Length: 137
Image (tube, rainbow, N blue to C red; front, side):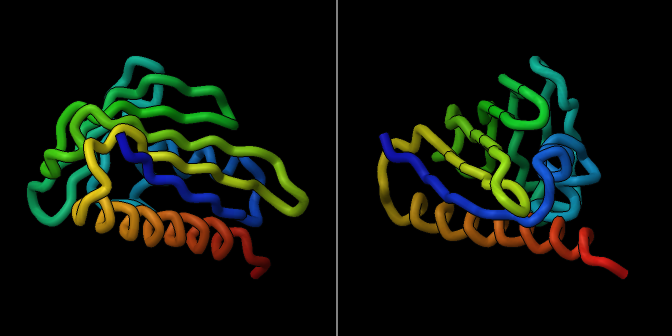
């Protein structure tokens, strides 16, 4: 099995990062504009991309404000089905360190490489969204 991992430092408190990961409004600001999420353990989320390309997850674990785990139950990308997406947060001087993992890919192939790159871009979007929102006016 192959896992995707990223580490991102974000200059806001973990509570803000957690909110951006666990609310539809937060997700709409960094991942996809068309998102539904019932952010309770046992809840579900559906994230829509490019007119009908859906990813559905089961919310497996939530430990505010430090841990989020989703299990992908269906996806327009067959290689995502059954994978696990984990966001772990820890306090760091001046903000939060986000440890991201998307686990359980069958192979580290070309589609895996594309997904790795896309997650890097989305996590950069998350960082920029939160830090811009936190700038003094």
